[in-house]
Image (cartoon, rainbow, N blue to C red):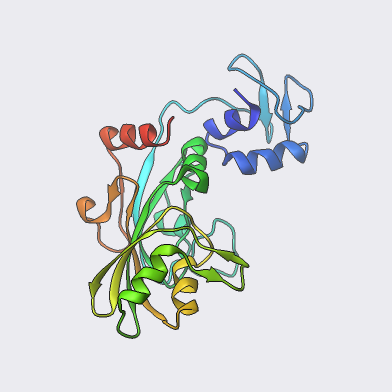
Length: 235
């Protein structure tokens, strides 16, 4: 497999982060600095931080109910409460898909960088579902415009078409297949609405309600759910 995929499969980091390690000369293969795109196997000696890397034998996937106020970052000295610190899992795990500090809901974390990479790639069209409360009543025009895609002036792009259904007079469900920064909040603001609360309730086939989690809790997903996730990701 490609070197960046191998590093991710060892639980060190994502493929994108692995590319940075390789480019920075922090990885050696059989005692030499590797080239980008190099192919390796388990017989090759891949070294990072003085340690030989080995493929993960136990792949873990966690489902976590992030509370409002928790920051999605792995390294931020200014953040008082971060996802990684709150979970404090004994193995290195990272997450697919951020939730901003003011949002809550489902997050998936894993020690398998390949799984994380697949879930994060917008091109894979993996669904994430949210329930959103806004500051005033919504109408059919709002639903139509949100569904068709909204031009975000500050990002200079139009969001991908998505599914939006009305929940109540000022709340709705939205299913996205992309993850632009604060996307739902920006979409609503472009149409003259402000988000009061935002909660992610589903990532692909994993639904928050089915897990029975309370805010701040996490659970290790069972083998059947993990197999389904890997299948959905083509892994």
